[in-house]
Image (tube, rainbow, N blue to C red; front, side, top):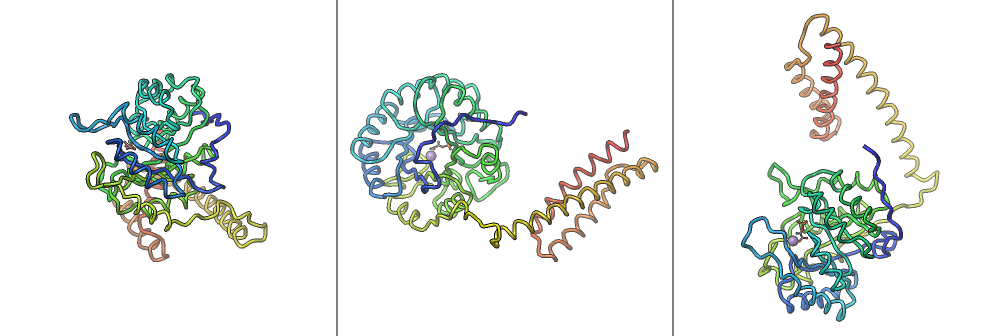
Length: 362
Ligand code: PEP
Ligand code: MN
């Protein structure tokens, strides 16, 4: 697969992490003119927040629930633009949403998680946006598929949208977890590695699904060098028409923001600083580790040859059980996390099986 590349042009100053972080707040859904304006006025009093979000068209899991106020909400957002210093952002899921939002002068559009998962819908949005000069954010798809996320960004970029950002809102999980959507932090980290200039905003509200983990998730996002956070904020969360459990009041948002600690991206480490010495040491250990891994795989191959000569199966269940139990015990004694040891050995074993299957059938 070819390495992704985006023509990002001049990024909005708002998302320049070296100048601070961008905070987006507002209700899950616009419900009434009063609710939108009261919430926006309260958020406007929090200087760190620069963008007001509100869902106008809502993707609901089941039919016959509240599906958004539609175009009326865009008029209320125009009042927010006039009466506060906040920029506005809405979710678009099809071409007509794009045309209406552009007509009413919304500042930023975002593509929702369910939409990102569908390339036909993303392409329809991209085609509707052709020639528009607007900032567009792309939420991760509901399933943990980095390529699908990148693909959506590429479709928009190929339609001429250069002011792009990604929103990390967590992923659907099979197993039960404390979160509504598991964060899988490794996915946004990989996105940052592949597209270092693309700003990423974290959406702790949709990761958490409740108000409990919002502070710790927000802090984690900042510690992972993300460019901003989006927090669903409502003047009366208990009576919200969608996502009532995860929305916070403007006062709570203010408190949450004041508890965040913004660390430096780079410390401009001098060559003789403690950080550079430790990095040097860590590099040297990695090289040793790679040599050891190469030696281990050579031994694995020789074991494969022995199994071939003696007509033995590749998988030796008893032996594998003993290995994992022994390594877990030894590893944890050395202070390593048990899950970490288990994960490493599962990867080593999977590759050993692959190598030996090739040897045996050669
Ligand atoms: C939302 O932001 O309200 C929303 C519907 O989010 P997501 O697309 O992440 O589910
Ligand atoms: Mn929501």
